[in-house]
Length: 292
Ligand code: SIN
Ligand code: FE
Image (cartoon, rainbow, N blue to C red; front, side, top):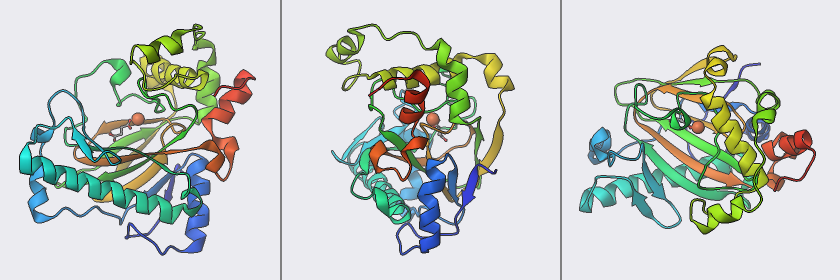
């Protein structure tokens, strides 16, 4: 089975072919990447200047934007530049939402905003610790933002102006990852989740689910032998293409590429077409207890 499902759409908004939308949510939930090779995010002439690493603040990997608060962070841009950069990211956020809602109309009442990110720095060769290194296979789990089992759905768009692809690897299925690393998940100490929240290390309470997901993320990234030997498929997402994936379920690594937009959404498990595909349900089955 190919891990990619290709859709021919060239518009961010509907109307969609009903057969395509029936498939979209099903295949996403089952762990496929929905790939839209003809869907591009158009930059205005005076936005082209933002295609430069100079707009990162040099500390964070990505410029980030909060669509709910309309706030931009981690950028060197000031004044008019800052407003225009924020407007560009806000436009991407809106288009990404239209895309998800037109492909998966069933998610509409439940879909929650996450952050928008713009990634103007080359991924390949960037310095980072192994745990933060996204060139290593991982499922997404956020140390400071526990989500109690909510699904993480992300929309990516490669806007590289030199025609360079974003190069990813996809790894083994989630069930296999969970089986492999389950014995390396340490107990979550009573009171630790409360303390982390109290100390503002986490935004909200880290559930048993978050604890396990974070461990799957960390243990997989820290295991050199696993990173080398585990089965993987290399994928090149061409410049001016878009793709969507539930990154909490699909093992992925970004090996190379520069200039990417990404929008995060959260989806309650109950809003899925088939909850059995949720990492929460798979882990509850594996650990034989409620996790969130
Ligand atoms: C990631 O989500 O791990 C990185 C994706 C990317 O930057 O291409
Ligand atoms: Fe990731």
